[in-house]
Picture 1 (spheres, rainbow, N blue to C red):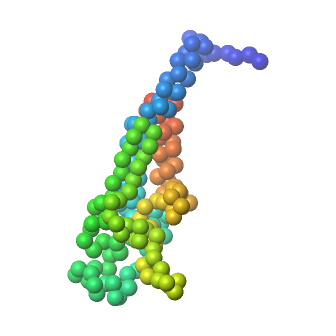
Picture 2 (tube, rainbow, N blue to C red):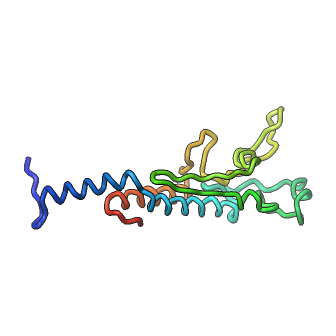
Picture 3 (tube, helix red, strand yellow):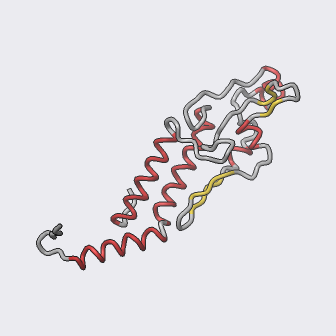
Length: 163
């Protein structure tokens, strides 16, 4: 087996490039920041679109719920705006984090049931996670966002540039 290099290139050039790529895998902060902003947009858009991160329509509010709301608003998950404004995203050298500190967020994300098994609060997922804590990327637009993040991270590792 033979290895050849283009004119002007040598094994040392390859070694330097691989060393630089390996170093970038240890601190991918630029790519993670871009990814965190994309996840934030994905979550915020669920509120304005009234759809899950996978583009499924949220169940409409019941008439009883609408009557209890301020100004009889029919917009799901937005009465005071507290939940929507509590969404936080962050990034680190190799991580993207997102969540909320609002106590009722889980009830809205996953829904609740009564003792007899009937639905009390229907699930209206606004974050791209499953009950088991896995990312949901089974359909657009969540898949598109996560694919872009993966490509951006790959680009950063290979050439040091975020796409």
